[in-house]
Image 1 (cartoon, rainbow, N blue to C red):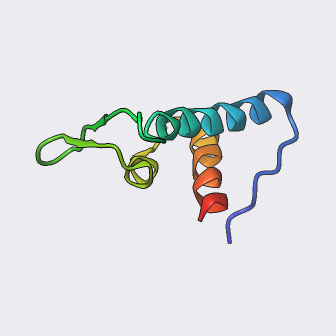
Image 2: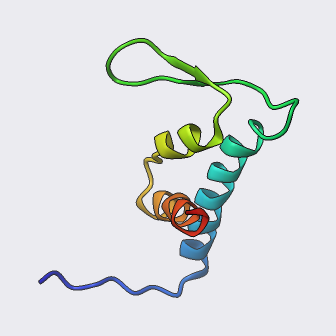
Amino acid sequence: MAAKQVSFAADNREKLLRGVNHMANAVKITLGPKGRNVLIDKSFGAPLVTKDGVTVAKEVELQDKLENMGAQMVKEVAS
C-alpha cells in the first residue's frame, strides 16, 4: 500500500483553494436565466457547447494535482 502524503503547508492550501475557485468560476457563469454558454473541448469529436453546470463540472480536470483535488472536492460536496 502506498504511503499517504499529509501536508499542512500554506502553499498547498492555496493550491486547493485555487482548484475550488476554478471549479466555481467555470460553473457559476452557467447559473440562472441569464447563464452563459461554456465551450468544452474534448480530445475526441466536436467541441461541446452547453449551459448545464453539471456537465461543465464533470469535464473540469486541472493539471496541478492539488488544484485538481480542490476541484474534485467541490464536485463531491455538491453531489
